[in-house]
Image (cartoon, rainbow, N blue to C red; front, side):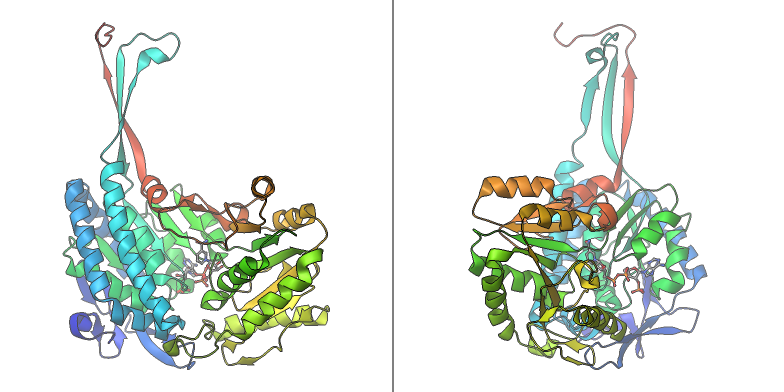
Length: 496
Ligand code: NAP
């Protein structure tokens, strides 16, 4: 059970502690932040509301700890990461339990998130030792006008203190996808978990503590992003920010100083369906892509753009599958579970009502109880409806019927988002042309958009992000190139 056994020391009464300088601490604020269970809409857990002084202290210790961590051999850093991964997997149950209660993620998917996170840490350790174990060697005589008098050696050095801010929907996985690359590259790490998901994150951080990482190298500051977020992201002690979330990321990028930013933001992933597509395959992918975790995924299918000639058949096939989705409690592993908050449910309802008022065809009756929204397919959506453009982050999927491929590409590219997209056709040549024309970070051919496997590059363009994630790209992003040039008194040619 969360907060018991190996995790007993991370909680004090009914409030979970924050983690700084290798210890679990109570905030001097004496205040806590409640975490509301999306299913019951009652406060389920509490975390510390950390103060600005506590953030200052954490930044100081993170800076000091990073200096000695950077001198720790790479293989030892990797060894500790492997240890943390094993401990995390061993303790998957209490962490998954917290995910069920904090973000209403179905029980099985919650366990999968923790196991996947352990695998990500191990993969990152392995990738890191190879990637960071290499540098480059350049000679001067390849550039016009130079003799071979200069040898340039480059290596990758850490940035310093990395601030990691993950969102609620994959709090553990998206936290470790920042923590592991930062640490293997020799950085220290300050984590600001999402409020919904903070308790799962604190348990995950304790697994790093149990693995015996040096004091101060990892810290976890809790509190509402709206209250301590700006202080953290504008803190002079931060050397890099890795953020995943919504529009907040755009505001952060405007305020952050001259430091590297990795921003993975929202998406409106389009699914373009051509006449020759295997409609059974498309329907299965629309269900998986649009309704997994109740549509609360950055890479969920968020708009279907289907050729008019096959639209009736596709809508019928998707409707039949929607009817089979189970709706209810995350503890019972239902497909559709309550969305994360009441305000999120209200936002989704606003999009649905706007579509209704403007004449969309409802394939199911709209139904909501508390934060639980039944899956809904909206057919014949038109561009004047908000849902054609906005990210519902819920189990509601619009279908726009298109008369040509160009129309589909135009809709996709008119979006301010550009995370992923997908195209379904048996014609690989057409698929390639469409993929090239789509302004999105990744295009999946004949499958729903997906972030994984975790070593694949993952990036958004336009308002969907800055930089690229994926294990290798994140390690590279959290390092800087350092050169040393050896200047020879006379030209020297190898074997010359
Ligand atoms: P969010 O509201 O932007 O919050 C993300 C994180 O930012 C949370 O930890 C939040 O903390 C924190 N935060 C809030 N205000 C802040 C501030 N002023 N300064 C610094 N941090 C602040 O997003 P969300 O609702 O958790 O997640 C849903 C969004 O994330 C969707 O738009 C989705 O598409 C996107 N997403 C993108 C990806 C991707 O890789 N592209 C992956 C997953 C999700 P609190 O919880 O305490 O407010």
